[in-house]
Image 1 (spheres, rainbow, N blue to C red):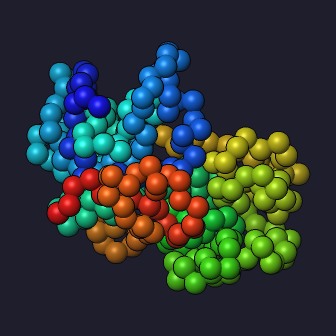
Image 2 (cartoon, one colour):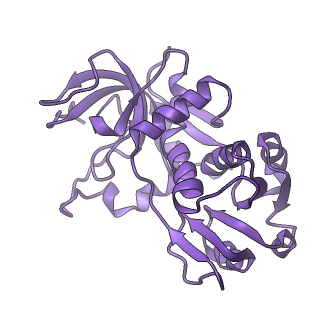
Length: 286
């Protein structure tokens, strides 16, 4: 692919590490621009950590050579490349003591976890939250953020996820293959990343006034006396900076489940073996 063009208010980032979502190859925006025009061949990946290589016209707040991380745009070529063009407002400065691999695991997972728990569900101290996929990229961060605010955390996943979820701070763990979801009882918040039958059955667990938030699919069933919200993560450079500070202080630990070189990106998308956390593509070896 050619070297990307820096549009107005853009930054060209020399990519050091990149994250992706396995399902993004099914997203319409992966293959078309904002006007719906085909843009095949396409570069996927929407989480980036690297160094500013070039500034577009009018770009302020960042400088060439600066370490940055953040979200690439949904309907443009993404982060799984040596260079990518990103709107400057979608990036945050990255401190020198945070590895690019760790930073690339943070943007989608961290922002999704924060926005789901606090912007949409308004989770508060003393409430109980059920987090599905508690050992995954989003779920593992959600468990930590919910625990830090003083919520009681119930995690779910497969049997192999139990130790990871409990180590991250979940008080209770349910094996979705073996345990009865109804044993959870009523909760104030359900955070769903799975969808399907798990999403539908989880609506029964929301106590009156509670909230179910999901990133999987718009819910077809509503809690009896609560809310069900589907959302897509939004860029937020100020929140990214806050999350990075939590990583620096040891209050947040993004889980990197696997690390692969850029040459193995295609096979990383195709992998069927489950690993906790996120798979990160390392573009530059340091």
